Length: 134
Image 1 (cartoon, rainbow, N blue to C red):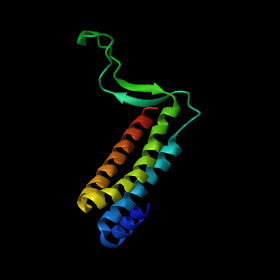
Image 2: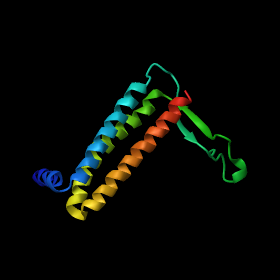
Image 3: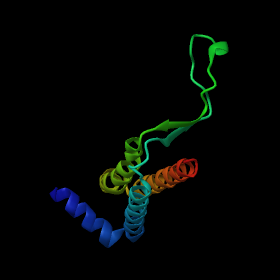
Image 4: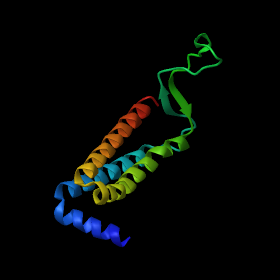
């Protein structure tokens, strides 16, 4: 914990760009967490929880493939993955970035933070598409 605090202080004083990216990731994950919690509707019995372009296999050959592609129904509790993702990416990825800065340098940590932001934006787009089909 002591090393983590020292590394974070070093980032704040020496790496302003990395610190700004870490703050932006935290803000983006907080926005995503708020949006996903507000749009969750526990009163609904069935919600769209996933999408698949390809159907599932009923047997061994391609001819036995069911046409099950499209949106999948499920319960609202399956949508808890989005708030959990927001918390994990917002908190844990910032901590991982501090460790990456210590071991691999600022450029690797910046790339990791940017990749984490792309993951959050992708999850936000998926959530919007699922909400649009309800």
